[in-house]
Image 1 (cartoon, helix red, strand yellow):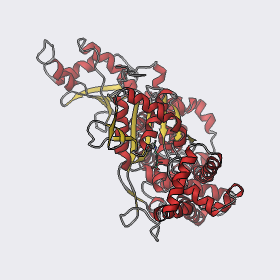
Image 2 (cartoon, helix red, strand yellow; image 1 turned 180 degrees about the vertical axis):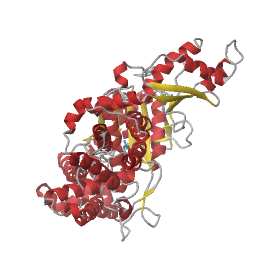
Image 3 (cartoon, protein in one colour; image 1 turned 180 degrees about the horizontal axis):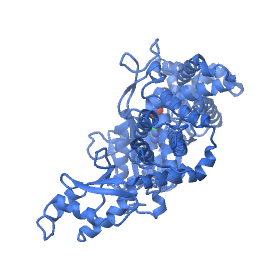
Image 4 (cartoon, helix red, strand yellow; image 1 turned 60 degrees about the vertical axis):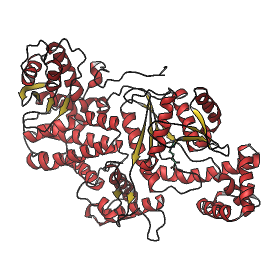
Length: 604
Ligand code: ARG
């Protein structure tokens, strides 16, 4: 069976050149341990080093290979007596390295690793000089598609689309940072039978449709609802609407033009939201893939995948008792046929190695069926650790305070724009209450209110594991205490003000100053900073932005509660080193904000 583009991706075996692991402790340790493992068990050449950061008092990291190795070699002729002796040998065979201060073997053979504080300091120092992008992880593939946001024409963007937009944007940013070429795709629902009734209704409402302006149409969603009512209650209208679909799909200019106008009106609405959220996307909607459907289905048919079932054409997939309908009994295409064409396009035309779909978990079955069909067709390998691969990034519901689906008081679907307006209004009020902001120019107040307000909405979403439901609560997300964007943004601003108030030229210090990590809290902060790269890598691999949020929150806590409480900065003998640690912290925090789509503030 031919598997296009399939490449083996053993996480640690895609070893790149040394400099590609800059700032990535885990991978650098893995390299050293790989040498030792080869030496320790020459008969087992392909052992992947199992390295994990740990909070044990014996070390910063652990190598956990001894137990697994023992179960492979016991019974064979071996000099070892059990896992601890394997651990001892792994430790003994380590090549000399400036990274490691000391190692010890504990319990059933864990090798505990204490990193050298000088090595940590050197890494921080070189990051400050060469920039944090030198710490970007390297992922073992080139191109990814992130399919996110994807609202539907003539319908309002709702909080579900907000989640998709926020989560998808962050995933795209993290992958882009990690040297992946990301195609940000807005799979807008801009095709289908609903356009027939909408167009017919608008023609009736505005006899001179050609001259109608966007403003006059205004609320497309209301027209959509009204047209649906007519469709369901008036058989004559229904007939006309069905005719309209045929005329539209047949390419009749008047209908095509109306359709394009409707899309344009919606698009402008969506665009306003994206602008406020700082999100960039490229639209390739359902209509874009529509022309590819016949040939894609033809290919699937030739491969023997398509069957007849109750007048429809379907693909059976393993483990699901309903088949995937690809041509409806009326001959029309549907959501699934479009997604098959889109997947084909992304694999063959765009050469994407990882295709990521961000929608609510309710669509999981749809995607699993599409992916299984693609596996049956040999488009993607059955083994999900191989590329090209597809992943559905599902997310839970947004709940209101009453524990039910988030609605307005009049139980309408919450409009995204209203929500963002309120976040901004509330954060503006909080800013104006602060003594320090009294003399800020209006423009600065506005900008800060947006950064804090929208940042709070994003962070409240991203900090949760995306699969869980979360409760939308303005008071909570806009609080300056606890795990909120407001707390984090203010912590960052405070660090910036420590540096400003020291009166030192930080750019100059970066060149001549030296970081020393003698105090345990300096060391703890330094180590956490240096774990940024591996955390981003993990967040990318598992498509979990909350991993990065947790890292950022811990960074802020270590800085405030350990380092800044116990290590005097300005006026101390260690001032230069400590100012550099402040700068390194602010730099890493800003990169986290950037990856989470949050705009930092520098003053509070
Ligand atoms: N328009 C769909 C919705 O609002 C989401 C599309 C997701 N992407 C896809 N390739 N199916 O539910």
